[in-house]
Image (tube, rainbow, N blue to C red; front, side):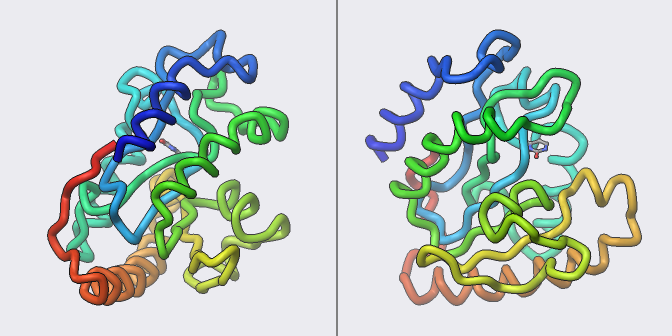
Length: 197
Ligand code: URA
């Protein structure tokens, strides 16, 4: 995935918004760039800022164990965020920071072309599905947009705050996993692990 590597190395030097002043690392994205499944979270937190990798803190550990509960591993999917640098004190990303950062994610999407996108949480769903997305009533539903099948599930940080939502998320992930296996089977690429980026 040379094109993805080229975008990544340009992105690592990004100074398009003031978050460049306060970040430690750009959190570009990680995983199998040939996977049909891409997860898009919100924004890096303190651990991700330190490691440069998405979902490596407490929410990331929960994401990993929820993926494992449906037989998926993060190495089989691609994971990115709506913005690539940590907002100070974990505040919500500002609309202008999201707009400045979006071209990077769009470039990733154009190169990876996942068949399915899973938005982790409301902020990502509002950006990629529709501005008035309601996570409590619309999580787990497939939407079609720009040639992608898109679903939103609860953000793992929300599941840490409210474990009673984990059952719903398990059901949503089961449906995602079934679709993922179907697509991997159809593409004849089961087990492929190349293209990490
Ligand atoms: N929360 C997110 O939305 N993304 C991360 O990478 C980590 C925590």
